[in-house]
Length: 190
Figure 1 (spheres, rainbow, N blue to C red):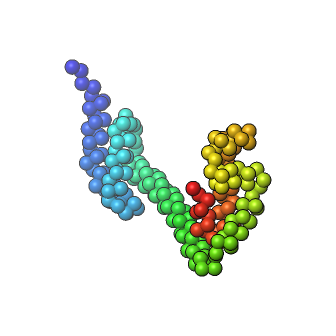
Figure 2 (cartoon, rainbow, N blue to C red):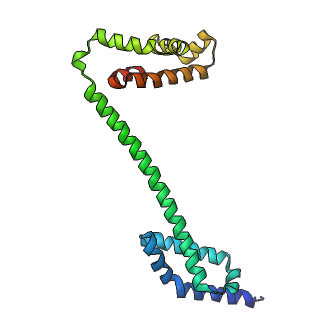
C-alpha cells in the first residue's frame, strides 16, 4: 500500500484548520445570523466545501482572511434568502389581510333584511346581463340550466377549454360586480 505524503499533509492541514477555527467561525457567524443552529450549519457547509476542495489548502496564503471571507459570504447568502422568504411571507399576509377586510366590509354592508326575493333576482339578473354575450350564454347553460361543460361545448360547438375559460371569466366578473353582496356570489360557485 502506497501512502501519498502530499495527501496526508493536506488532510493534516485540514484537521488543524478545523480545530483552530471551528469555534471562532461559529461565534462570527452567530453574530450575523443570530441562531446558533443556523451558524453551525453555515460553518459545517463551509468545512464541507473545504474538505471537497482540500487540494487548495496549501495555496492559501492567509487562512484567517480566507476562512472568514468564506463564512461572511455564506452569511450574506443566508440573510438574503431569509429576507426573500420574509418578503414573500409579508406579501401573502398582506393579501390575506386585504381579502379579510373586503369580506368584512362586504358582510357589514350586506343587509339581508332589505333583500327580498325580488331584489335578489334583480341584482343577479343585472349582474348576469352585464356579462359579455358568449360568456353570459355559457354561464346560463352551466349555472342556471345545469349542463355539464362537455354538453355546453357540444351545443355551442366550442371546446371544453373554452367553456372553462368563459365560466372563469364570468365568475371573476360576477365576483367584482357582486362584491357588496358576497353571499349572492357564492350562489354561483357551485
